[in-house]
Image (cartoon, rainbow, N blue to C red; front, side, top):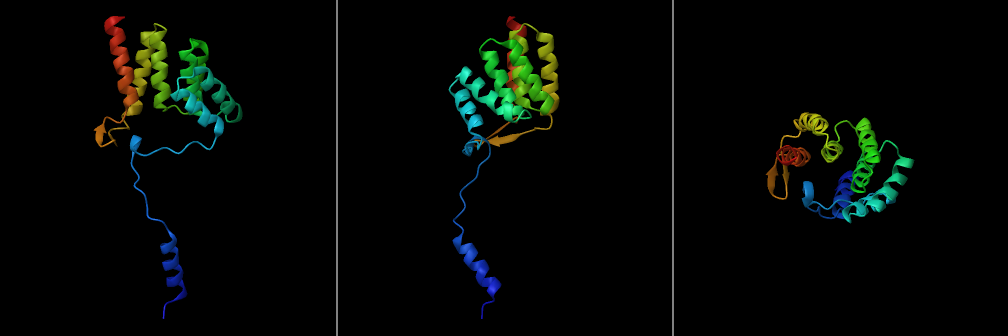
Length: 165
């Protein structure tokens, strides 16, 4: 005779659908954010709609001022519209909330290069290098990478700036 616990366990397992494969990095689809303003801001970012990013992410940080990624998106969008004062402000806010935000650091370094401040960009690059030491390697889309694309991108931009001015 089956015990009630064994029957319950068997029925529970039978009701569970088979698992789907889960991948790391860009191989897995990312769920849309439950914050509709944040989701709209990310959609606007993908579409390079900088005013749309600003509008949506300002709503996010009005409700959740601690949201470092929303501040990072704001910094990027403001930089793309040429408002460097607002861009720098939001990068700083992002980094105050999360000092190891690699994307905010990378974008801040890019802003300094665009503002012809390579010494500040070099400081950010060094800081990003330190952060990236804890991100040794990653596996994405069937290939290993250095795990810190943000550092690689900023280093390439910095090297180009130094070489070409």
